[in-house]
Length: 556
Ligand code: ADP
Image (cartoon, rainbow, N blue to C red):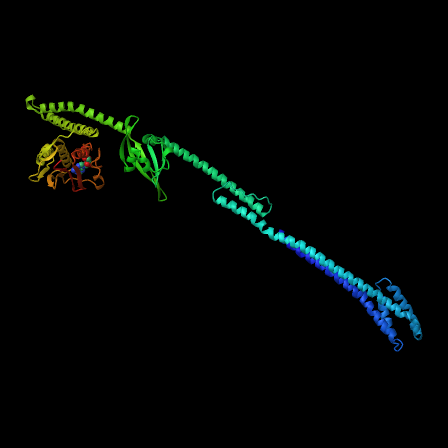
Protein backbone atom coordinates (compact mmCIF):
# COMPACT_ATOMS: atom_id res chain seq x y z
CA UNK A 1 0.00 0.00 0.00
CA UNK A 2 2.78 2.34 1.02
CA UNK A 3 4.76 1.68 -2.17
CA UNK A 4 1.76 2.03 -4.43
CA UNK A 5 0.59 5.21 -2.65
CA UNK A 6 4.03 6.65 -3.13
CA UNK A 7 4.01 5.86 -6.85
CA UNK A 8 0.53 7.39 -7.10
CA UNK A 9 1.72 10.56 -5.40
CA UNK A 10 4.72 10.78 -7.76
CA UNK A 11 2.49 10.44 -10.81
CA UNK A 12 -0.13 12.91 -9.49
CA UNK A 13 2.48 15.49 -8.43
CA UNK A 14 4.42 15.36 -11.66
CA UNK A 15 1.27 15.25 -13.82
CA UNK A 16 -0.43 18.07 -11.83
CA UNK A 17 2.61 20.31 -11.81
CA UNK A 18 3.34 19.64 -15.50
CA UNK A 19 -0.25 20.45 -16.54
CA UNK A 20 -0.28 23.54 -14.34
CA UNK A 21 2.95 24.99 -15.74
CA UNK A 22 2.25 24.03 -19.36
CA UNK A 23 -1.12 25.78 -18.95
CA UNK A 24 0.50 28.85 -17.48
CA UNK A 25 3.08 28.97 -20.28
CA UNK A 26 0.49 28.48 -22.98
CA UNK A 27 -1.65 31.20 -21.34
CA UNK A 28 1.27 33.57 -21.32
CA UNK A 29 2.29 32.93 -24.93
CA UNK A 30 -1.39 32.87 -26.05
CA UNK A 31 -1.91 36.19 -24.43
CA UNK A 32 1.11 37.62 -26.26
CA UNK A 33 -0.33 36.42 -29.53
CA UNK A 34 -3.90 37.39 -28.80
CA UNK A 35 -3.35 40.68 -27.00
CA UNK A 36 -0.32 42.17 -28.60
CA UNK A 37 1.00 40.41 -31.69
CA UNK A 38 -2.37 40.94 -33.42
CA UNK A 39 -2.41 44.62 -32.42
CA UNK A 40 1.10 44.99 -33.90
CA UNK A 41 -0.27 43.31 -37.03
CA UNK A 42 -3.24 45.75 -37.18
CA UNK A 43 -0.88 48.66 -36.73
CA UNK A 44 1.24 47.37 -39.66
CA UNK A 45 -1.89 47.06 -41.88
CA UNK A 46 -3.06 50.52 -40.86
CA UNK A 47 0.32 52.07 -41.67
CA UNK A 48 0.40 50.25 -45.02
CA UNK A 49 -3.13 51.46 -45.87
CA UNK A 50 -2.26 54.96 -44.74
CA UNK A 51 0.72 55.04 -47.09
CA UNK A 52 -1.43 54.13 -50.11
CA UNK A 53 -4.54 56.06 -49.18
CA UNK A 54 -3.65 58.99 -51.54
CA UNK A 55 -3.40 56.82 -54.61
CA UNK A 56 -6.00 54.25 -53.66
CA UNK A 57 -9.16 55.43 -51.90
CA UNK A 58 -10.10 51.75 -51.21
CA UNK A 59 -7.42 51.73 -48.60
CA UNK A 60 -9.74 53.77 -46.38
CA UNK A 61 -11.91 50.69 -45.94
CA UNK A 62 -8.87 48.55 -45.18
CA UNK A 63 -7.75 51.13 -42.60
CA UNK A 64 -11.28 51.30 -41.21
CA UNK A 65 -11.39 47.47 -40.82
CA UNK A 66 -8.04 47.23 -39.05
CA UNK A 67 -8.80 50.17 -36.80
CA UNK A 68 -12.07 48.51 -35.74
CA UNK A 69 -10.29 45.32 -35.02
CA UNK A 70 -7.70 47.22 -32.99
CA UNK A 71 -10.42 49.03 -31.11
CA UNK A 72 -11.76 45.65 -30.10
CA UNK A 73 -8.35 44.46 -28.93
CA UNK A 74 -7.28 47.14 -26.47
CA UNK A 75 -5.34 45.36 -23.75
CA UNK A 76 -2.55 47.65 -22.67
CA UNK A 77 -2.55 50.89 -20.69
CA UNK A 78 -2.20 53.92 -23.03
CA UNK A 79 -3.43 51.85 -25.96
CA UNK A 80 -6.95 53.20 -25.62
CA UNK A 81 -5.94 56.85 -25.81
CA UNK A 82 -3.65 56.22 -28.80
CA UNK A 83 -6.39 54.29 -30.58
CA UNK A 84 -8.97 56.99 -29.76
CA UNK A 85 -6.56 59.58 -31.25
CA UNK A 86 -6.17 57.45 -34.40
CA UNK A 87 -9.97 57.20 -34.62
CA UNK A 88 -10.48 60.89 -34.25
CA UNK A 89 -7.86 61.66 -36.95
CA UNK A 90 -9.22 58.95 -39.18
CA UNK A 91 -12.74 60.42 -38.94
CA UNK A 92 -11.33 63.74 -40.08
CA UNK A 93 -9.48 62.00 -42.87
CA UNK A 94 -12.59 60.26 -44.03
CA UNK A 95 -14.45 63.55 -44.30
CA UNK A 96 -11.64 65.29 -46.15
CA UNK A 97 -9.11 62.97 -47.73
CA UNK A 98 -7.48 66.01 -49.43
CA UNK A 99 -6.34 67.33 -46.10
CA UNK A 100 -4.38 64.17 -45.56
CA UNK A 101 -1.10 65.89 -44.99
CA UNK A 102 -2.53 67.67 -42.02
CA UNK A 103 -2.75 64.38 -40.22
CA UNK A 104 0.92 63.88 -39.53
CA UNK A 105 0.07 62.87 -35.96
CA UNK A 106 -1.71 59.79 -37.35
CA UNK A 107 1.53 57.90 -37.89
CA UNK A 108 2.67 58.88 -34.45
CA UNK A 109 -0.50 57.59 -32.81
CA UNK A 110 -0.29 54.29 -34.71
CA UNK A 111 3.35 53.96 -33.71
CA UNK A 112 2.26 54.60 -30.15
CA UNK A 113 -0.15 51.66 -30.32
CA UNK A 114 2.58 49.56 -31.89
CA UNK A 115 5.08 50.58 -29.21
CA UNK A 116 2.69 49.90 -26.36
CA UNK A 117 2.08 46.43 -27.74
CA UNK A 118 5.68 45.63 -28.46
CA UNK A 119 6.67 46.70 -24.96
CA UNK A 120 3.87 44.51 -23.68
CA UNK A 121 5.23 41.62 -25.79
CA UNK A 122 8.67 42.07 -24.26
CA UNK A 123 7.11 42.14 -20.77
CA UNK A 124 4.92 39.18 -21.34
CA UNK A 125 7.77 37.23 -22.89
CA UNK A 126 9.84 37.98 -19.82
CA UNK A 127 6.93 36.77 -17.67
CA UNK A 128 6.69 33.53 -19.70
CA UNK A 129 10.40 32.99 -19.30
CA UNK A 130 9.97 33.56 -15.55
CA UNK A 131 7.11 31.04 -15.48
CA UNK A 132 9.26 28.53 -17.35
CA UNK A 133 12.06 29.10 -14.85
CA UNK A 134 9.61 28.72 -11.98
CA UNK A 135 8.33 25.49 -13.52
CA UNK A 136 11.87 24.18 -13.90
CA UNK A 137 12.66 25.16 -10.31
CA UNK A 138 9.51 23.60 -8.91
CA UNK A 139 9.83 20.46 -10.97
CA UNK A 140 13.49 20.18 -9.92
CA UNK A 141 12.56 20.58 -6.23
CA UNK A 142 9.73 18.09 -6.46
CA UNK A 143 11.90 15.76 -8.52
CA UNK A 144 14.70 15.95 -5.93
CA UNK A 145 12.37 15.42 -2.98
CA UNK A 146 10.56 12.55 -4.62
CA UNK A 147 13.84 11.01 -5.86
CA UNK A 148 15.20 11.13 -2.32
CA UNK A 149 12.00 9.61 -1.02
CA UNK A 150 12.13 6.95 -3.75
CA UNK A 151 15.78 6.26 -2.97
CA UNK A 152 15.12 5.77 0.73
CA UNK A 153 12.14 3.67 -0.27
CA UNK A 154 14.34 1.47 -2.47
CA UNK A 155 16.77 1.10 0.43
CA UNK A 156 14.16 0.44 3.11
CA UNK A 157 11.26 -1.19 1.29
CA UNK A 158 12.80 -4.68 0.89
CA UNK A 159 13.68 -4.57 4.59
CA UNK A 160 10.12 -3.63 5.52
CA UNK A 161 8.92 -6.83 3.82
CA UNK A 162 11.85 -9.15 4.47
CA UNK A 163 12.40 -8.34 8.20
CA UNK A 164 9.08 -9.77 9.38
CA UNK A 165 9.41 -12.66 6.91
CA UNK A 166 12.86 -13.40 8.37
CA UNK A 167 11.54 -13.22 11.92
CA UNK A 168 8.66 -15.52 11.05
CA UNK A 169 11.05 -17.90 9.33
CA UNK A 170 13.28 -18.00 12.42
CA UNK A 171 10.22 -18.67 14.59
CA UNK A 172 9.06 -21.51 12.33
CA UNK A 173 12.54 -23.06 12.44
CA UNK A 174 12.49 -22.95 16.25
CA UNK A 175 9.14 -24.72 16.29
CA UNK A 176 10.47 -27.27 13.81
CA UNK A 177 13.31 -27.90 16.29
CA UNK A 178 10.69 -28.52 19.00
CA UNK A 179 11.38 -25.25 20.83
CA UNK A 180 7.72 -24.52 21.44
CA UNK A 181 8.50 -21.55 23.71
CA UNK A 182 9.71 -19.52 20.66
CA UNK A 183 7.61 -16.41 19.81
CA UNK A 184 7.77 -13.82 17.02
CA UNK A 185 7.77 -10.18 18.22
CA UNK A 186 6.48 -7.83 15.52
CA UNK A 187 5.14 -4.49 16.71
CA UNK A 188 3.39 -3.67 13.44
CA UNK A 189 -0.38 -3.70 12.97
CA UNK A 190 -0.38 -4.90 9.36
CA UNK A 191 -0.78 -8.34 7.82
CA UNK A 192 2.66 -9.36 9.12
CA UNK A 193 1.68 -8.29 12.62
CA UNK A 194 -1.49 -10.37 12.41
CA UNK A 195 0.46 -13.32 10.97
CA UNK A 196 2.92 -13.06 13.88
CA UNK A 197 -0.01 -13.04 16.36
CA UNK A 198 -1.50 -16.15 14.74
CA UNK A 199 1.92 -17.82 14.76
CA UNK A 200 2.34 -17.03 18.48
CA UNK A 201 -1.10 -18.46 19.24
CA UNK A 202 -0.18 -21.64 17.38
CA UNK A 203 3.19 -21.87 19.20
CA UNK A 204 1.38 -21.34 22.52
CA UNK A 205 -1.02 -24.18 21.76
CA UNK A 206 1.84 -26.48 20.75
CA UNK A 207 3.69 -25.55 23.93
CA UNK A 208 0.62 -26.31 26.01
CA UNK A 209 0.11 -29.63 24.20
CA UNK A 210 3.76 -30.56 24.58
CA UNK A 211 3.74 -29.77 28.28
CA UNK A 212 0.53 -31.60 28.99
CA UNK A 213 1.84 -34.60 27.01
CA UNK A 214 5.17 -34.46 28.73
CA UNK A 215 3.53 -34.33 32.13
CA UNK A 216 1.38 -37.32 31.22
CA UNK A 217 4.35 -39.28 29.89
CA UNK A 218 6.37 -38.39 33.01
CA UNK A 219 3.55 -39.52 35.29
CA UNK A 220 3.18 -42.73 33.28
CA UNK A 221 6.95 -43.33 33.42
CA UNK A 222 6.96 -42.71 37.17
CA UNK A 223 4.13 -45.19 37.63
CA UNK A 224 5.85 -47.88 35.57
CA UNK A 225 9.14 -47.28 37.41
CA UNK A 226 7.35 -47.57 40.75
CA UNK A 227 5.75 -50.87 39.68
CA UNK A 228 9.06 -52.26 38.39
CA UNK A 229 10.84 -51.13 41.55
CA UNK A 230 8.27 -52.67 43.87
CA UNK A 231 8.52 -56.05 42.17
CA UNK A 232 10.08 -58.89 44.10
CA UNK A 233 11.83 -60.16 40.98
CA UNK A 234 15.10 -58.63 39.91
CA UNK A 235 14.74 -56.82 36.58
CA UNK A 236 17.59 -55.50 34.50
CA UNK A 237 17.30 -53.87 31.06
CA UNK A 238 19.89 -53.73 28.27
CA UNK A 239 19.80 -51.92 24.96
CA UNK A 240 20.90 -53.60 21.75
CA UNK A 241 24.49 -52.36 22.29
CA UNK A 242 24.40 -54.29 25.58
CA UNK A 243 24.52 -51.13 27.69
CA UNK A 244 22.63 -51.24 30.98
CA UNK A 245 19.43 -49.18 30.82
CA UNK A 246 17.91 -49.73 34.23
CA UNK A 247 17.99 -51.93 37.31
CA UNK A 248 15.13 -52.25 39.80
CA UNK A 249 15.58 -52.28 43.58
CA UNK A 250 15.39 -56.08 43.82
CA UNK A 251 18.09 -56.39 41.14
CA UNK A 252 20.23 -53.78 42.96
CA UNK A 253 20.09 -56.04 46.04
CA UNK A 254 20.87 -59.19 44.05
CA UNK A 255 23.75 -57.79 42.04
CA UNK A 256 25.05 -55.53 44.81
CA UNK A 257 25.06 -52.62 42.35
CA UNK A 258 23.47 -49.17 42.35
CA UNK A 259 21.43 -48.19 39.32
CA UNK A 260 22.87 -44.67 39.17
CA UNK A 261 26.43 -46.04 39.07
CA UNK A 262 25.94 -48.39 36.16
CA UNK A 263 23.24 -47.05 33.84
CA UNK A 264 24.62 -46.36 30.38
CA UNK A 265 27.70 -48.53 31.00
CA UNK A 266 28.62 -51.64 29.04
CA UNK A 267 27.25 -54.74 30.76
CA UNK A 268 30.42 -56.65 29.84
CA UNK A 269 32.58 -54.03 31.63
CA UNK A 270 30.51 -54.29 34.82
CA UNK A 271 30.43 -58.11 34.59
CA UNK A 272 34.22 -58.25 34.95
CA UNK A 273 33.77 -57.26 38.62
CA UNK A 274 30.39 -58.89 39.18
CA UNK A 275 30.08 -62.69 39.22
CA UNK A 276 26.30 -62.81 39.14
CA UNK A 277 26.03 -60.41 36.20
CA UNK A 278 28.62 -62.48 34.37
CA UNK A 279 26.58 -65.66 34.96
CA UNK A 280 23.39 -63.91 33.89
CA UNK A 281 24.98 -62.66 30.66
CA UNK A 282 26.29 -66.15 29.82
CA UNK A 283 23.09 -68.02 30.77
CA UNK A 284 20.32 -68.79 28.39
CA UNK A 285 16.74 -68.23 29.43
CA UNK A 286 14.95 -70.44 31.99
CA UNK A 287 18.14 -71.28 33.89
CA UNK A 288 17.89 -71.73 37.63
CA UNK A 289 20.30 -69.73 39.80
CA UNK A 290 21.16 -70.25 43.44
CA UNK A 291 22.07 -66.95 45.10
CA UNK A 292 23.01 -66.21 48.70
CA UNK A 293 20.75 -63.41 49.76
CA UNK A 294 20.28 -62.13 53.33
CA UNK A 295 22.41 -65.01 54.59
CA UNK A 296 20.20 -67.67 53.12
CA UNK A 297 20.02 -69.66 49.94
CA UNK A 298 17.61 -68.18 47.43
CA UNK A 299 16.53 -69.61 44.11
CA UNK A 300 15.88 -67.63 40.95
CA UNK A 301 14.80 -68.51 37.46
CA UNK A 302 16.34 -66.34 34.77
CA UNK A 303 14.13 -65.21 31.94
CA UNK A 304 15.33 -63.13 29.04
CA UNK A 305 12.77 -61.21 27.00
CA UNK A 306 13.74 -59.54 23.76
CA UNK A 307 11.98 -56.18 23.43
CA UNK A 308 10.70 -55.34 19.99
CA UNK A 309 8.55 -52.56 18.64
CA UNK A 310 7.43 -52.55 15.01
CA UNK A 311 9.81 -55.39 14.23
CA UNK A 312 12.87 -53.52 15.53
CA UNK A 313 14.71 -55.04 18.50
CA UNK A 314 15.89 -52.27 20.80
CA UNK A 315 17.18 -54.44 23.60
CA UNK A 316 16.25 -57.08 26.16
CA UNK A 317 15.06 -57.35 29.71
CA UNK A 318 16.36 -60.03 32.03
CA UNK A 319 14.06 -61.03 34.86
CA UNK A 320 15.37 -62.99 37.83
CA UNK A 321 12.22 -64.55 39.22
CA UNK A 322 12.45 -65.36 42.88
CA UNK A 323 11.19 -68.93 43.25
CA UNK A 324 12.50 -69.43 46.80
CA UNK A 325 9.01 -69.49 48.40
CA UNK A 326 7.89 -72.17 45.90
CA UNK A 327 11.07 -74.11 46.51
CA UNK A 328 10.42 -73.96 50.26
CA UNK A 329 6.84 -75.09 49.79
CA UNK A 330 7.98 -77.86 47.45
CA UNK A 331 10.56 -79.00 49.98
CA UNK A 332 7.89 -79.05 52.69
CA UNK A 333 5.61 -81.08 50.42
CA UNK A 334 8.39 -83.54 49.59
CA UNK A 335 9.16 -83.91 53.27
CA UNK A 336 5.55 -84.50 54.05
CA UNK A 337 5.20 -87.10 51.29
CA UNK A 338 8.40 -88.83 52.40
CA UNK A 339 7.24 -88.99 56.03
CA UNK A 340 3.73 -90.15 55.18
CA UNK A 341 4.83 -92.80 52.68
CA UNK A 342 7.44 -94.03 55.10
CA UNK A 343 4.91 -94.15 57.94
CA UNK A 344 2.38 -95.93 55.71
CA UNK A 345 4.85 -98.61 54.68
CA UNK A 346 4.99 -100.25 58.14
CA UNK A 347 1.24 -100.78 58.60
CA UNK A 348 0.97 -101.82 54.95
CA UNK A 349 3.61 -104.48 55.48
CA UNK A 350 1.75 -105.62 58.56
CA UNK A 351 -1.44 -105.95 56.48
CA UNK A 352 0.45 -107.88 53.77
CA UNK A 353 1.86 -110.23 56.38
CA UNK A 354 -1.57 -110.75 57.89
CA UNK A 355 -3.21 -111.46 54.52
CA UNK A 356 -0.47 -113.97 53.75
CA UNK A 357 -1.15 -115.64 57.10
CA UNK A 358 -4.85 -115.81 56.31
CA UNK A 359 -4.08 -117.36 52.93
CA UNK A 360 -2.09 -120.03 54.78
CA UNK A 361 -4.44 -122.95 55.39
CA UNK A 362 -2.78 -123.73 58.72
CA UNK A 363 -4.56 -120.79 60.35
CA UNK A 364 -7.87 -122.11 59.20
CA UNK A 365 -9.83 -122.75 56.00
CA UNK A 366 -11.53 -119.78 54.35
CA UNK A 367 -14.78 -120.22 52.55
CA UNK A 368 -15.17 -118.97 48.95
CA UNK A 369 -16.56 -115.55 49.84
CA UNK A 370 -13.92 -114.96 52.50
CA UNK A 371 -11.20 -115.99 50.02
CA UNK A 372 -12.57 -113.48 47.49
CA UNK A 373 -12.59 -110.67 50.07
CA UNK A 374 -9.07 -111.56 51.04
CA UNK A 375 -8.04 -111.44 47.37
CA UNK A 376 -9.40 -107.87 47.07
CA UNK A 377 -7.58 -106.85 50.26
CA UNK A 378 -4.33 -108.31 48.93
CA UNK A 379 -4.68 -106.59 45.53
CA UNK A 380 -5.38 -103.18 47.03
CA UNK A 381 -2.62 -103.54 49.60
CA UNK A 382 -0.22 -104.25 46.74
CA UNK A 383 -1.44 -101.14 44.95
CA UNK A 384 -1.02 -99.07 48.07
CA UNK A 385 2.47 -100.46 48.53
CA UNK A 386 3.32 -99.60 44.94
CA UNK A 387 2.03 -96.04 45.36
CA UNK A 388 3.83 -95.47 48.65
CA UNK A 389 6.97 -96.95 47.08
CA UNK A 390 6.74 -94.52 44.15
CA UNK A 391 6.10 -91.57 46.45
CA UNK A 392 9.08 -92.52 48.55
CA UNK A 393 11.26 -92.79 45.45
CA UNK A 394 9.97 -89.42 44.29
CA UNK A 395 10.75 -87.73 47.58
CA UNK A 396 14.24 -89.19 47.46
CA UNK A 397 14.73 -87.85 43.95
CA UNK A 398 13.37 -84.43 44.84
CA UNK A 399 15.59 -84.06 47.83
CA UNK A 400 18.55 -85.20 45.74
CA UNK A 401 18.97 -88.27 47.89
CA UNK A 402 19.11 -91.01 45.28
CA UNK A 403 21.59 -93.49 46.65
CA UNK A 404 22.99 -95.76 44.02
CA UNK A 405 24.43 -99.14 44.88
CA UNK A 406 26.31 -99.84 41.67
CA UNK A 407 27.75 -103.25 40.91
CA UNK A 408 28.41 -105.24 37.72
CA UNK A 409 25.25 -107.14 36.76
CA UNK A 410 24.51 -109.26 33.72
CA UNK A 411 21.67 -107.72 31.68
CA UNK A 412 20.02 -111.13 31.44
CA UNK A 413 19.63 -111.28 35.24
CA UNK A 414 17.87 -107.92 35.27
CA UNK A 415 15.47 -109.07 32.55
CA UNK A 416 14.68 -112.30 34.35
CA UNK A 417 14.01 -110.52 37.64
CA UNK A 418 11.68 -107.99 35.99
CA UNK A 419 9.73 -110.63 34.05
CA UNK A 420 9.42 -112.72 37.19
CA UNK A 421 7.81 -109.82 39.04
CA UNK A 422 5.05 -109.26 36.45
CA UNK A 423 4.48 -112.85 35.35
CA UNK A 424 1.30 -113.34 37.31
CA UNK A 425 -0.15 -110.06 36.17
CA UNK A 426 0.57 -110.91 32.50
CA UNK A 427 -0.93 -114.34 32.89
CA UNK A 428 -4.18 -112.79 34.13
CA UNK A 429 -4.50 -111.05 30.73
CA UNK A 430 -3.17 -113.96 28.74
CA UNK A 431 -0.23 -111.88 27.68
CA UNK A 432 2.96 -113.58 26.56
CA UNK A 433 6.23 -111.94 27.51
CA UNK A 434 9.08 -112.78 25.14
CA UNK A 435 12.59 -112.36 26.40
CA UNK A 436 15.00 -111.34 23.67
CA UNK A 437 18.36 -110.99 25.35
CA UNK A 438 21.39 -111.03 23.07
CA UNK A 439 23.92 -113.70 23.80
CA UNK A 440 27.16 -113.01 25.66
CA UNK A 441 26.24 -109.56 26.86
CA UNK A 442 28.89 -108.12 29.16
CA UNK A 443 28.03 -107.23 32.74
CA UNK A 444 26.98 -103.63 33.22
CA UNK A 445 27.88 -101.52 36.23
CA UNK A 446 24.57 -100.33 37.62
CA UNK A 447 22.16 -100.25 40.55
CA UNK A 448 20.43 -103.61 40.26
CA UNK A 449 17.34 -102.78 42.32
CA UNK A 450 16.55 -99.42 40.66
CA UNK A 451 17.15 -100.70 37.13
CA UNK A 452 14.87 -103.70 37.71
CA UNK A 453 12.32 -101.27 39.14
CA UNK A 454 12.41 -99.32 35.84
CA UNK A 455 12.00 -102.49 33.76
CA UNK A 456 9.08 -103.62 35.96
CA UNK A 457 7.49 -100.21 35.47
CA UNK A 458 7.86 -100.52 31.68
CA UNK A 459 6.39 -104.06 31.78
CA UNK A 460 3.53 -103.04 34.10
CA UNK A 461 2.59 -100.23 31.72
CA UNK A 462 2.90 -102.50 28.68
CA UNK A 463 0.55 -105.03 30.31
CA UNK A 464 -1.84 -102.28 31.40
CA UNK A 465 -2.11 -100.73 27.94
CA UNK A 466 -2.15 -103.98 25.89
CA UNK A 467 -5.22 -105.98 25.04
CA UNK A 468 -5.71 -109.55 26.23
CA UNK A 469 -3.66 -112.21 24.47
CA UNK A 470 -1.12 -109.87 22.96
CA UNK A 471 2.65 -110.25 23.12
CA UNK A 472 5.23 -108.12 24.88
CA UNK A 473 8.92 -108.30 24.02
CA UNK A 474 11.63 -107.42 26.50
CA UNK A 475 14.93 -106.88 24.77
CA UNK A 476 18.55 -106.37 25.78
CA UNK A 477 21.12 -105.79 23.00
CA UNK A 478 24.60 -104.43 22.73
CA UNK A 479 25.35 -101.51 20.45
CA UNK A 480 28.96 -100.35 20.38
CA UNK A 481 29.75 -99.45 24.00
CA UNK A 482 26.19 -99.45 25.31
CA UNK A 483 23.58 -101.98 26.30
CA UNK A 484 20.09 -101.13 25.25
CA UNK A 485 17.11 -102.43 27.24
CA UNK A 486 13.60 -102.07 25.80
CA UNK A 487 10.04 -103.22 26.35
CA UNK A 488 7.94 -103.36 23.18
CA UNK A 489 4.21 -103.81 23.24
CA UNK A 490 1.35 -103.97 20.73
CA UNK A 491 -0.95 -101.90 22.90
CA UNK A 492 -2.88 -98.69 22.31
CA UNK A 493 0.19 -96.54 21.69
CA UNK A 494 0.44 -92.85 22.53
CA UNK A 495 -0.83 -89.86 20.50
CA UNK A 496 2.05 -87.96 18.92
CA UNK A 497 1.44 -84.75 20.88
CA UNK A 498 1.73 -86.56 24.26
CA UNK A 499 4.82 -88.69 23.53
CA UNK A 500 7.30 -86.05 24.71
CA UNK A 501 5.39 -85.54 27.96
CA UNK A 502 5.16 -89.10 29.29
CA UNK A 503 8.29 -88.65 31.41
CA UNK A 504 6.81 -85.58 33.14
CA UNK A 505 5.80 -85.89 36.76
CA UNK A 506 2.11 -86.80 37.29
CA UNK A 507 1.46 -86.90 33.55
CA UNK A 508 -1.06 -89.41 32.25
CA UNK A 509 -2.19 -89.48 28.64
CA UNK A 510 -5.72 -88.06 28.57
CA UNK A 511 -8.35 -90.66 27.68
CA UNK A 512 -6.08 -93.65 28.34
CA UNK A 513 -8.75 -94.93 30.77
CA UNK A 514 -6.12 -95.84 33.27
CA UNK A 515 -7.06 -94.36 36.59
CA UNK A 516 -5.10 -96.73 38.79
CA UNK A 517 -1.69 -95.15 38.17
CA UNK A 518 -0.12 -92.06 39.67
CA UNK A 519 1.68 -90.70 36.59
CA UNK A 520 4.92 -90.99 38.53
CA UNK A 521 6.41 -94.29 37.29
CA UNK A 522 8.06 -92.98 34.10
CA UNK A 523 9.34 -89.77 35.70
CA UNK A 524 10.95 -91.79 38.48
CA UNK A 525 12.35 -94.20 35.88
CA UNK A 526 13.90 -91.26 34.03
CA UNK A 527 15.54 -89.99 37.20
CA UNK A 528 16.87 -93.48 38.08
CA UNK A 529 18.35 -94.02 34.62
CA UNK A 530 19.83 -90.54 34.32
CA UNK A 531 21.31 -90.80 37.83
CA UNK A 532 23.25 -93.80 36.49
CA UNK A 533 24.42 -91.87 33.43
CA UNK A 534 21.95 -93.60 31.10
CA UNK A 535 19.42 -92.26 28.64
CA UNK A 536 15.74 -93.13 28.68
CA UNK A 537 13.62 -93.03 25.51
CA UNK A 538 10.24 -93.81 24.00
CA UNK A 539 8.93 -94.60 20.50
CA UNK A 540 5.24 -94.87 20.09
CA UNK A 541 2.67 -94.97 17.31
CA UNK A 542 -0.89 -94.41 18.32
CA UNK A 543 -2.92 -97.59 17.74
CA UNK A 544 0.16 -99.71 16.97
CA UNK A 545 2.08 -99.97 20.21
CA UNK A 546 4.94 -98.45 22.14
CA UNK A 547 8.59 -99.13 22.85
CA UNK A 548 10.09 -97.82 26.08
CA UNK A 549 13.77 -98.28 26.73
CA UNK A 550 17.03 -96.99 28.08
CA UNK A 551 20.68 -97.10 27.06
CA UNK A 552 23.41 -97.68 29.60
CA UNK A 553 27.14 -97.34 28.97
CA UNK A 554 28.87 -100.65 29.61
CA UNK A 555 31.83 -99.12 31.43
CA UNK A 556 30.27 -96.71 33.87
P1 ADP B 1 1.14 -94.48 35.46
O1 ADP B 1 1.34 -95.70 34.63
O2 ADP B 1 1.23 -94.76 36.94
O3 ADP B 1 -0.02 -93.66 35.09
P2 ADP B 1 3.61 -93.70 34.24
O4 ADP B 1 4.53 -92.55 34.50
O5 ADP B 1 4.23 -95.05 34.32
O6 ADP B 1 2.38 -93.53 35.21
O7 ADP B 1 3.01 -93.50 32.82
C1 ADP B 1 2.52 -92.25 32.43
C2 ADP B 1 1.48 -92.37 31.35
O8 ADP B 1 2.11 -92.75 30.12
C3 ADP B 1 0.45 -93.42 31.57
O9 ADP B 1 -0.60 -92.92 32.37
C4 ADP B 1 -0.02 -93.74 30.16
O10 ADP B 1 -0.98 -92.82 29.78
C5 ADP B 1 1.25 -93.57 29.33
N1 ADP B 1 1.92 -94.84 29.06
C6 ADP B 1 2.97 -95.37 29.73
N2 ADP B 1 3.35 -96.55 29.18
C7 ADP B 1 2.52 -96.78 28.13
C8 ADP B 1 2.39 -97.83 27.18
N3 ADP B 1 3.21 -98.90 27.17
N4 ADP B 1 1.40 -97.72 26.25
C9 ADP B 1 0.59 -96.67 26.22
N5 ADP B 1 0.66 -95.64 27.10
C10 ADP B 1 1.60 -95.70 28.05
